[in-house]
Figure 1 (cartoon, rainbow, N blue to C red):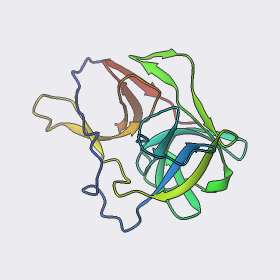
Figure 2 (spheres, helix red, strand yellow):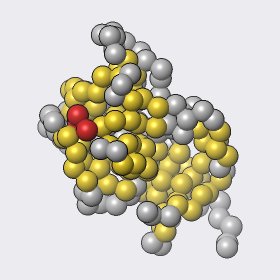
Figure 3 (tube, rainbow, N blue to C red):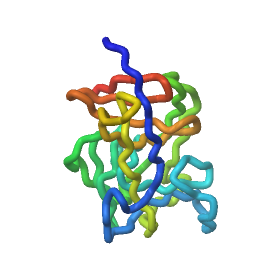
Figure 4 (cartoon, rainbow, N blue to C red):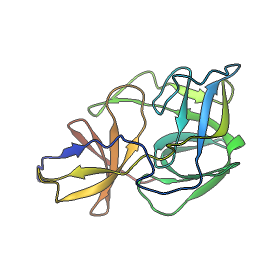
Length: 186
């Protein structure tokens, strides 16, 4: 396998420049009996998290696991997801069907523990309006000038640095720091 130098342009910026949506829906997971949302953001926190469009998460919905699924859309009562970088919606669920969101601990290709979860038993899961409700696509560059690149989506994990998932030449990859991991579609 040829060795290539990959430069990640971190565009962890959120906004509407990627998609001009009127729909400002996001999913808020917040600890039960908590009303204060201050400090809750788009990364894993014990208190809660906002799940937004174009973010890749690990879900358990209706008794079935959906690892590495990207949120395509969120309506007032439904969640639309697809596997990583696929463009077509693969699954539609009621928000009330979400049982759990799992946040693996990954660092440079090494899986650590624990894998914190946010379950519907301990967290309220509801749709809220959020002004910046979509991750921008990022770029994985294959040269310094970045004229050879692919679009990538952000995978939300517990701690460590952001992970980017992209498709190149029909294969799926996750860039985890300096480690490139080939993913297999289920």
